[in-house]
Image 1 (cartoon, rainbow, N blue to C red):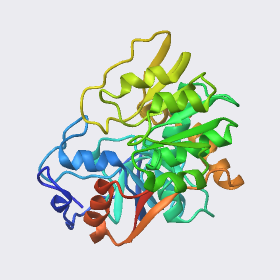
Image 2: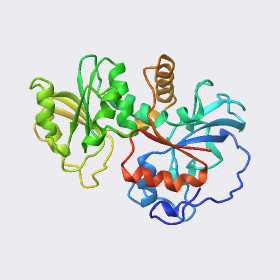
Image 3: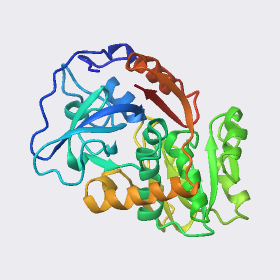
Amino acid sequence: MLFDEIGGPEVLRIHDVELAAPGPGEVLIRVEALGLNRAEALFRAGTYYYQPTLPASRNGYEAAGTVEAVGADVTAFAPGDTVLTAANFELSAHGVYGELVLLPQSAVVPRPADVDAVTAAAVWVTYSTAHGALLQTAGMRRGQHVLITGASSGVGTAAIQVVRRAGAVPIATTRTDAKRRQLLDLGAEHVIVTDDEDVTKETKRLTDGRGADIVLDAIGGPGFQALGDAVVPNGNLVVYGWLDGRPTTLPMNWPLSVHGYANPNVTATEEGRHRAAAYINSGLADGTLRPVIAEVFEGLDRIQDAHRLMESNAHTGKIVVKL
């Protein structure tokens, strides 16, 4: 699946591309399922933080599959191993929308053999982001209140579970009332509907006037400034997305800490990938992490439809394409 120009979902087209045999340090993977991420829609549209290399740009960060072959010097993986892609690569060069993908071994992580491909395709980016942002960056602890904006997204629904697993209290925001009940059922302690309620006032009310200890923000923009009023003194604001699209305005009501989180904080090193994989796999095993899958599309030719659903914002959780 390639695209030759920036634009809407219709620019994504299937092409027959011959792949070379794996070279030294490379792994060839047969893809079984793809997990879509907001970054891929932004990349396709030319609004991501870097531009695609055109024509014939690849796309796609996240795949679950099985190792077909390995090159020389690859010791961590062997043919038949079930794996995930680590989403730590440049999209034009290594995007994983395809039946077979060739990646450096540093872009591959193991997955438990008993986790099916659809479930596996929905876990890596969402849970590694929530884990890295909340536990490693903000130092989340038991009993803390965590405000999660844009909570119906893949990362948002994962963050609710990561917060619960740590014994902290998740407070979710969503734009309309349509997703309130679903977010409560997914584990949010409280849900703030931002079209009808003031986030700062509601957060203060729900925490007995204290505020949230941590804010995990997917939206950015001018509204980010107001989130500073929703946190406790010396609280942590972690922004990992910019769905608003406008410049992000920093809060000035110090003392507080603002972190711009990017997932290479976790995925760039072997140690970071190992730590994230261990956390995710243990959570899948004990049932505390259960990926929320919004819809499964059958076939690579449904990528355009999957992108349309992503951009509609009508879904809750992760969109998966099964090959």
